[in-house]
Length: 371
Image (cartoon, rainbow, N blue to C red; front, side, top):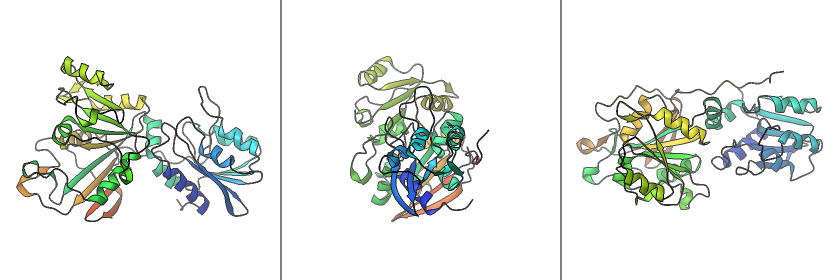
């Protein structure tokens, strides 16, 4: 597919700027154009607020303009919290609408509504770019489970740390800042109990060193109830979900519940928590995107279950040798993984390697709505 037009690219940039703030609504951008010039723009507000199209239209007289928007405008449906954007567009007198992608939740009804009102509608400008931007939303709409990003930091010889040598954090400041921006863009972060015990992380998103206004849900896998209820991850700075198994200590459960933490009891398969059951439950809670931060056993379990959609590997220029803790746990099932659409981002002294695993592929863009 061809690159987005300049006006659609402006709308895509707006959508990307609010990723992580709009869930469960998709992050959408819109620009109004008259005489070859952008006269107004808007992005989706946090859930319950105006959508991108409404934000743009509220800023100017839109009669006779062209509206570029990254996703199909919405229509009325039961329980809707905001006015339908199609009705707002029609009432504003917009002449033409250019849409990158049809919304699977709307299913072409928005396009038909606009065309029935005499508005010229074009579909497909920037479809590929918007599909990549909205991968978490599209997967959640299609399968009902979150889009999973595995995030690892490894040495050149494939180790994630060397606790015996006092090395638990590998990357430099640029990589850490990048990881915090990613945390702020997702709905949830997940670690295992081993990470909590070893590192006592807060698991908050702190882009530019400041807490993000909307914090991701923190998820801890703890089948046996090993974590300390006083750990930093359980502090009331962001919502927390603990996934455990039948038989974990009642006193430990009660201590977590008293701190306002949500407990999920999962089945166990071959001694491990059932991760597909976890993802289904998270999807039902409107969690569309999830970063799995570790440790090695947790990563291996997600890869072995074919549940990872995207990998972010921060590679640091160190060799940890025989004291290094390997990324792939010995004798733990771990498949061969080939990455697609690989991007390499220098973050001196480290390098970020990103790519899609192919576990799930977004549906091909539909450029013609059903009649």
